[in-house]
Length: 193
Image 1 (cartoon, rainbow, N blue to C red):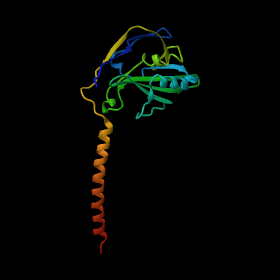
Image 2 (image 1 turned 180 degrees about the vertical axis):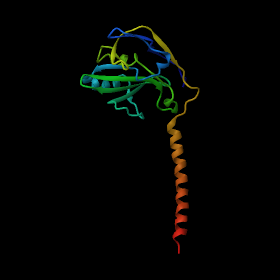
Image 3 (image 1 turned 90 degrees about the vertical axis):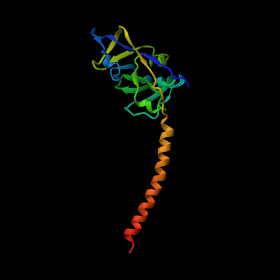
Image 4 (image 1 turned 180 degrees about the horizontal axis):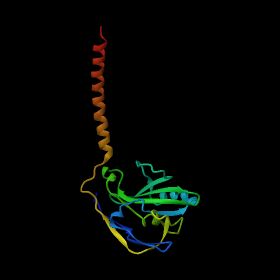
């Protein structure tokens, strides 16, 4: 399969609800905790169902971070959009999202780019408001003024983790049996009288 680059827009300058202007430094564009998307908490399940209708599936394996749903969808090979939906307080739910290499590959662990705009395309049928929270300030974003265009380039090679893990397990099983035989011989010799 041909691998493709993918470009993610990430906010460069924002205006918060209190009127403050904030410039996002380039060293912060990989910080997934900088922005979240807000939605009514009562919509969490409906948004998850809508994501499934739009080709998302359970994002396993993944590290649990307290989310109610963790879902992923392929964008273009080998990239996928990973969305985590959290219930947050009594009024809002939050979405944190990023683009990454497909979880079928080891490289999944190393290339991650937060995404602010892409998730909305997949849940706007359920909740039409685009509300973005600037997490450090605890304020919503009133206006976006320019974006960074972050181009993600896939690695030259991808390593599927499942065949490697199965191979390691099979090799370990062979050695485990040999070690057991050695321990049995040692135990016999130690307890023989």
